[in-house]
Length: 264
Image (cartoon, rainbow, N blue to C red; front, top):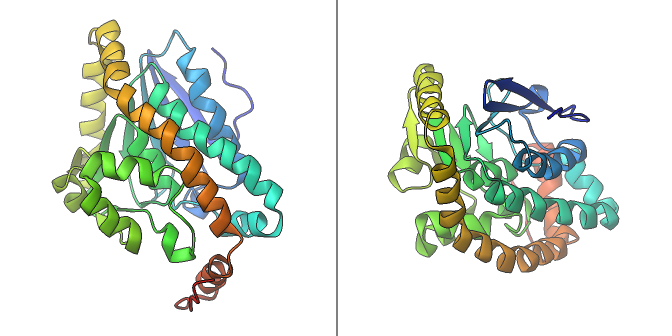
């Protein structure tokens, strides 16, 4: 299969392994409108790719993904129709990763924040470099954690811990994230490729039908939760998108100061 029309995501084939690299390193691979749209359709295409058995997802440069690009977030405040499209794409991103036939391995080479964390945690297996920070700070900019965080975090680490981290937006170092089960493993940064490549080779040389069937079986309850949760959580995020607190959160981030939230 030829993957055309992707400019912010590099796609490289190595035998039956497809390697995807989010490629906006100058912005720490933060999602803008283009990358969000490309990610929303990519995994549906991959699911139809008979030449691919395993997928690896990572980021270019020193980050996995810093989440949402602040200029893009401002665009969604200024023009709510941009949010409407984004909401539909957001649901597709999460469901398409969960529903793809192939196991998807997240190579978390640096910060995975906000939507970056959501995309990483939707993957089947997550390996992170020690020191990488992982978290969902939607609330820190006045947004509901609606693009998948409220689905994935409780499923991975339980409701009590998920509430703690999603209500505060606290970032977690990779070693701690592995200890609580948010990710699979944290490894020294200089050994990340070796660990990822060994695991990918094991899957690529394994019984493909059995592995893919096991993924479908394991993910079925999570897919059901996601289908139920995402419509509500994204609708609530849409409400928070036009709140005064969200605009204050964006302003504070750009001005490098603490936000002054008012609850409106």
